[in-house]
Amino acid sequence: MNSSYNDLLSSQFHTRALYLIGTVTLPIHLFGAYCILFQTPDTMKRVKWVMLNQHFWCCLLDLWGSFLGQPYECPPIWGGVTAGILNTLGVPSGILVYLMVTSLQFGIIATAFLFENRFFLLFADQSWWKYGRYGYYLLNNLVAIVYFLPTLWNAPEQEKARELMFETYPHLRDYDHPAHPIYVVANDEDKMDGIRYRMLASIVFYLLDIFPSLLYTKRHALSVCLSSAYH
Image (cartoon, rainbow, N blue to C red; front, top):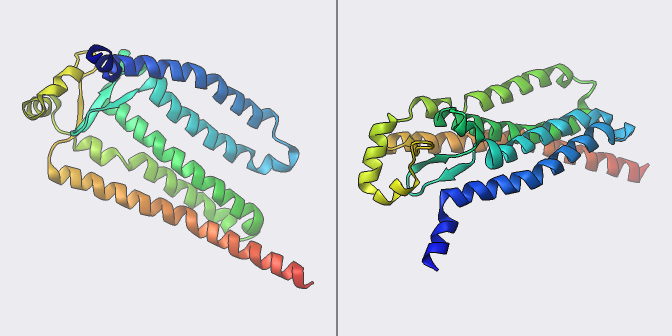
């Protein structure tokens, strides 16, 4: 019984399960892309590409989790293992973590772009926002690209960090393997606090990114409805 339970907790089972999930979901993602590209009605053509953009980043995030990166967290440390196809091809774990986090950031801003596009089409296509939105796009993309760079640059020297980690948490040696060593993101409080502050700042940034257009759209839609009711 304990042996079967331990097998379910192993990184090997985790990897096999993710490959299976990815095999099932990939055709669904491709079908979704086909529907957006070829089945979108003419009345929705102006939202077609922002829909495809969001679909792409959602699919890529799924592929990072199931095929490409397969992140396996090792609590209580700030670190984990990558065991996907790119790890097998020799891509460093730090680069994989950066690409996964950056893809997540792009997935979030793709959602913000959906709301912005709706706001633009309904209320701002003849205003200064027609040109100002390009700066909005540029800022969001820059934030997504640079968000994880400080964490990547400040990551500790991995061999020393792993040895210190194993002294405190010897059971984590079971997850460390030459083919996919544990990658330690941070191992001191100052660096951990820096990551927490950046996470909080990014949450505030994206809330400010999405909610103004939502509130403006809601307010003007209500105004239009009331105007129609009185006329």
